Structures are given as C-alpha cells and as structure tokens.
Amino acid sequence: MKFPKKIRTYCPRCNTHTVHTVVVYKHGKRRAMAEGQRRYARKQEGYGSKRKPEQKRFAKVTKKVVLKITCTRCGYTRHILLGRLKKIELVDVVR
Image (cartoon, rainbow, N blue to C red; front, side, top):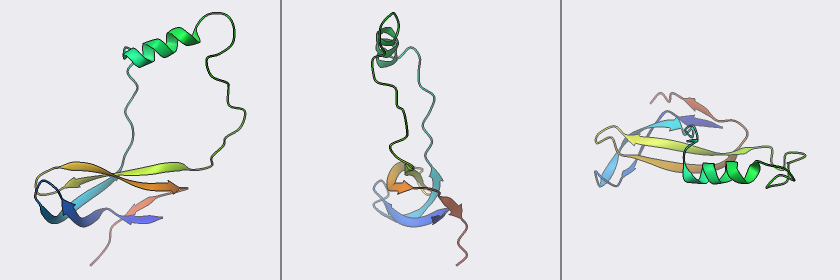
C-alpha cells in the first residue's frame, strides 16, 4: 500500500486541520530491568518445560502497521492503526 509522507488531518492540540508528517512506528528496545521482563526471565529459567509453548509455525503472514503522525505546527504526535498489511510504502504526493 502506498501512503503519503505528509497528510492534512485534525490536530487535537491546535484544534484545527494542519499538515502532519507520517512515519511508520517502530517499537523501541525492551528494557531488561523492567519488572515484567525480570518476571518473565525468572519464570523461563530452570529445569522443566518453558513457560509458554514454542510456536511451531507462524499463524499470521502479516503484521499490523501503526503510523506515527506529527503536527508540523505544534509538534503533537499520535498514532494511527492501519491494520494488517504485507507492505507499506511512504511516497511524496505532488499536488
């Protein structure tokens, strides 16, 4: 799917429609010292079986794409969930 790099949409902080820049959201690195990650590591270690069953094959062939849009006027950032896509391409739209 082709999606424009800049879109004109509503900004809740400006309370009006402004131009927003669009990038594909990429999650950050997991923190090893976070409580949930420490708990997960503690449950995974030791003898016996794993905490969760190992996945034999992929259930899904696509990932859900999230776009991060940033207002060019005030810098307010929010996310838009596009849904499942095999491929997304951000393109310059000439108008």
